[in-house]
Length: 179
Image (spheres, rainbow, N blue to C red):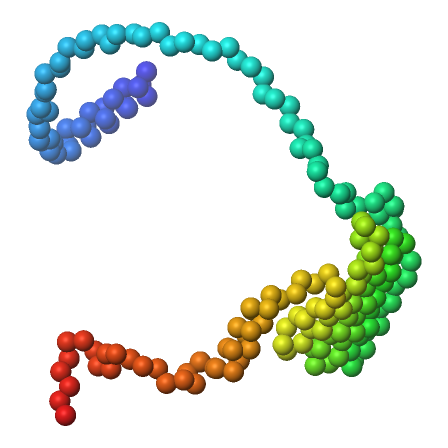
């Protein structure tokens, strides 16, 4: 009881000693409330729920690219020779896929890869990769259309800026040239 009396005395003394600062009163504007009117209810038709269709693959209308033996193909030979002056690498699989490449210290790579197509044709692509880019050759590489070949030849024969350019407005419009 004595503790409670002491706590009340300390709190009373603290309240009496602390200065009271008046708090400004700011009236809050009151706006009239408009009556709420009921909104008419319109019934919405409920349609029966149907389960989503089960997806299944679209029918294939093209030749199957892979063959059953491709799944079980194994590497039958492999060569990896990395040297200070270049490299030689290659492999062959039991389903007749092969790859070979050799490179030198200058970044030039010569190689080839091949396979047997679904039609039974042997397909081989040879390539050179160097400072001029990747350059594949082979029967399976699409040929550049003749019109593009002619256009490239014309561009090479007429480099940008080689022909004089006729400018009908040699001076900016709105500027007077004094001679």
